Every structure is written in C-alpha cells, then in structure tokens.
Length: 225
Image 1: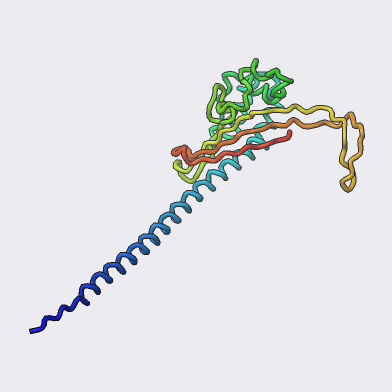
Image 2: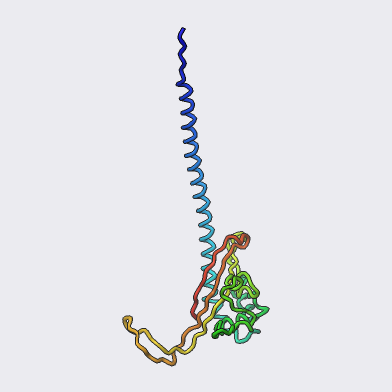
C-alpha cells in the first residue's frame, strides 16, 4: 500500500493567515492616519480660533485702549478714572487694569523709554525691565501683570477668550532731525525741527480660552503711536 501526504491545505491556510495580517496592518494604518488627521484638524481649528482672539485683542489695545490711556493718564491716580470710563464703554468685555494697584507702572510705560543707557526708568514705577525674564515677556505672569485684560465673548461661556496685554518695551519719540525719504526712493539730508517721531511700544498679547487655558495664542506687536 502506498501512502500519499497532501500538504496543500496547510500551505493555503498559512498563506491566508499571512494575507489577513497584511490586510489588517494596512487597514490599521489607514484608520490611524484618519484618526490623526481628524485630531490635527481639530487642533488647527482651535489654534486658529485662539489666534483670531489674539488679533482682536491687538486691535482693541492699539486702536482704543492705548490712545485713550496715553491721553488720560496725566498722573498715576487717573488710571482708576480711565478704568471706570473704559469699563462703561466696553462693559461686556469685563475690561480691567490688574496693575491698578501700581498704576504708576502703566503711566511710566506709556510716557518713558524703558532704558536710558543702563538706567532702568521703569524700576521706580514698580515695573522692572528685564527682557530676558519670562515674568516680563509673558503677559500673564509677573509682579505687575498684565497691563490690561478683558474677555472676548463667544456664543457660549465655554467659547469665551480672555485676552492679556502687556507693554514690555518703550522707545519715546521726539523731534526728528535727520534723513527724510523724498520722491522715488531718494534720501536727502534735511532738517525739519517740527517733525515728531512717534513713541514705539512692544506689546505682548495672549488670548486663551477661559475654561481651557491650554488653548491659547501669543502675538508680539510693534506699535507706533
């Protein structure tokens, strides 16, 4: 009697298992990519929302708050009056000056250059200048923080954004005498005693979701006034 062993069934089973594993790996990879893509889209959407909040904060600070503050703050004691006026005007924004307890700081930032040589002009006003220190650059931390804050209202309370703004560097302008750009890009040396150079402010702005501070955006602004 002759025995014949047929192993083709075993090979077919092994091959089917291998193909199943390959298909499973491909499907798992596709599901992972889809899941990650969805998550990244969500992250990007939340960041864009925070970024728009920061941009809105910059507009309000530079076009409304600083011009009014620069006009109204003739003395440190005038800050409480300014805060009251702005609070009435922008009541829904819950606007406030957390530095009001040391209001001379904001007045110094608006009216004096940060440094004269190695002299810290802000120190006497209660707002030490140190561009390398995180407590100054970050508008939400430090001894005097921020200069102003307000809430941008969303459709629901969960979508509100708090905006913090702080002036971290100031160069006071004055009478300008020097090169003046004339015509088609031609520079000529002229003297114009009546021409005024603006004050230059560096402002740090941060917008963060009120109920989730991890959703935030930061902007650094150079503003001439």
